[in-house]
Image (cartoon, rainbow, N blue to C red; front, side, top):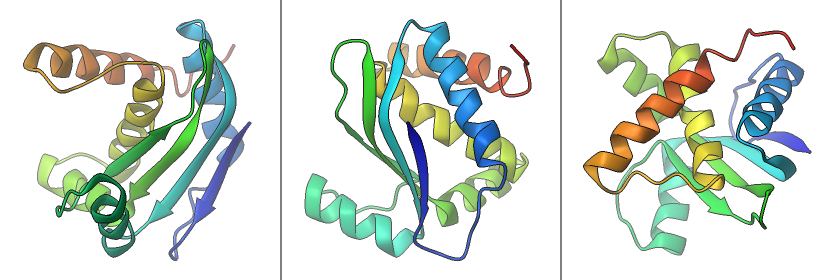
Length: 139
């Protein structure tokens, strides 16, 4: 199950479209959804989580807590809408495109993809691009 929560005045809209997309992405990698919770928040909210749980005193666009077991993917994915908006502006991309990138980035982490090394970052970006293209693909 995929649920969406809001800790600020923001609404994703079309939540069922996003859930369907994420389930198709999981299926494309031979995973199934357990419980995935997206929490959309602002910079302050996510910064507090980053400091408290990860001891990182920095702003970030996403934090993923992984509760996956085998091929059952689950976790909490916190997304700073402030960071996503800033990233979209600085990258010259649309907000919804950057939001999809960040959302699927968290799911890719839940499936075991990492982005610590340069090689992993290249693979992660390729997977993000591939999975974003699946958003409007009907099955």
